[in-house]
Length: 487
Image (cartoon, rainbow, N blue to C red; front, side):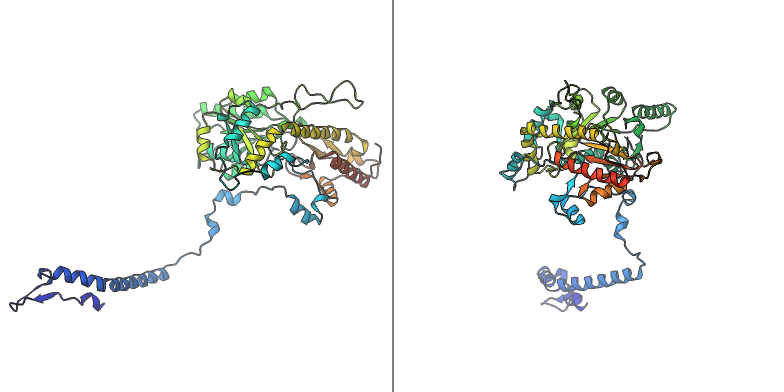
């Protein structure tokens, strides 16, 4: 520390012996400047060493708890159940020890015909994949406006409809307000997933199998009426901020009627109508032929019975659609929605800037150009749906009950009741055993054993050849149970 005092504090004038302070000397300011340049870096270093040593002593003397990085995770997310996605071909092939070409994938409601050649070529020829995509998907929204009859200004494109569901939650669910949403399970699992993710409380109003999984409109109305009565008594209770309606519903394929939907729209809430599978629903003018090929003509694919234009009539309605199913673009993740005009400025603010990539926008645009071909594929899948119902009427499939569906899948309950086996040597069927039996032979279906779906399977519609193979294996399983070939 001697450097601090190494500059002279006093100096002597030439004309006498009297000492004066250095600040009064004519050269004082120049001497001080030179001294600071020479000595202050060293002084600062010493001071820094002293401060570090003091700080180290303080840290070592303090009792600090061990740090666990997981403690930073929000409490509700630590309790949250993960979503169980369907595995892709490559992973399944490794698990099953099979080549992907040997697997018949009927578990995720995908288009079995794959991406049409024109779409594949358009993606390959995309001129600017090295440039960020249009953040507003302008060209695609204009094409969707022509396709849906909804102005482009009311449409928003997302990285799959799943992103739009998440955006809706982010938009209307408030932190630390105990906001609620109404869900009608069994249904699409992403509503519960995003509710958990955004700390929303879910009010579940259950669909019933013996009622054809119909949307429980009366129960939802009753719940809102209870809240209204409580509010009149002065209770501080908010209405649910969102009611989710899937039409056709996943996993059963049921639809909500126009009258029931209008009843929901009269409630003080935001209604989100998810039409991911609407292209597979029958229009009123569609008819199926009878088994003998009678006078009725096979259904032609007309405009699907969508309610997307209802958003122009109702200010509390959102309608979501996707390219994943009918257009075979599940792997590229392109969805879109029609929204209330008042919500769109805020949705544009919170969405990711480049949420739909170049390949997705190009593929969706070309799919709209190729919709005649793609809707022809939709008609083939609907024909396979009808054929499945006809085949499962055979006596050897008495243990498998299919529910009515307006989608590209059919939900079936595996009947394990003893009445089917009374007075015979037949074994009791099991949904899990059936899933495993099919899986071992390279056929994948969706298995459920959750509330409302006990002993259920869901079969996505494949190509005619894939479905033929499915029926062969189902008959083999029927023989294992002890059923004959009474077809």
